[in-house]
Image (cartoon, rainbow, N blue to C red; front, side, top):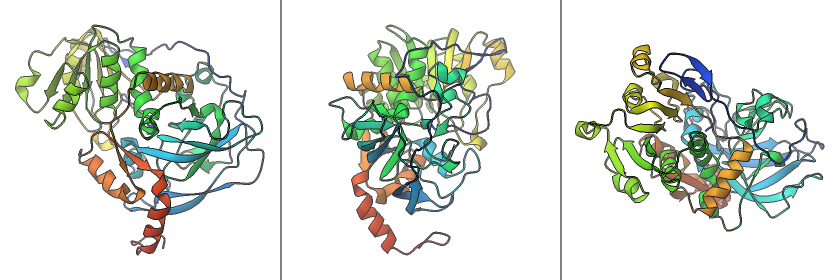
Length: 415
């Protein structure tokens, strides 16, 4: 999830709101990783990489072709020809300025898988022809405490995959995966295991790691009672990981359309929150409850469902106008229930997630679309009509580019 809005009680990375109304960080274990450069490496040549994609030119515009420059391939960098790019709900929040004021044109996309076309002179992790993935970030300072603990996602000078100022390449605004290619440091690219289903890999680089990280952090295991609120792109990944680890999983959503999907993925129970009878008897039940809900909802209801010392992990981040909240009375009277947020995972943990997912055949359910369907896909996501992740087939770029350029431009868009 690409999360850069103003901080609030729900979006603070791994902060805990305790029932005794204190705020404290959760500790994270340090782990070994492929050693990155001591500092972020600037490009060593001046030849930028000309790229093409589809961009939003304003929050109200349709997607249109956009040509732009990526930074040069430096000694430690790789150039990836993008094969597939997932559509994350965060892409829509950014594109529509739901979280903050944005800069346009914007090429979204932080769920990327592709084939390496070029490597810098000091690259050792990859070779030309390898498959690689890119998630929500493409760089960080490499020197702060969080980077040292392999939690680069919490670095104050991290660079996100799109809609982010690249401090290490002259302040260039990054552009995402709805495009033909991307350049980044080898240290922020993820190795794709042999035999992986490439058309399903891209969403793992956001939806996968966003759910895998807190599931590992809370040490979910056999026999744990776990709930997942919101059964979309994130939620259906959380269910699969928790079930694989032996948990008894209950799914909450607002529609009957997903009941059989949840049960087929191994959920023990499905609760339609619009059916009041199904909500009875669930207080003081779950050790971990993972909320992936992207809209306003009753957070207190879920806090009450936690057991003593249980965790409500908030992953879904609605538009700023739709933020849910928990009042002080709920925190005091439902004492020692923790409420905290989590953002993706570090590079080492993301590699661990991808290896684990492929080895255990845990993949998102996807619908493959061409670039020409981008606007329609966004509308369907907003209406909750997709099960469960759209993935763009980047081989359709040329045909969609030609068709879009031949069509009349809308007011305020380039011709």
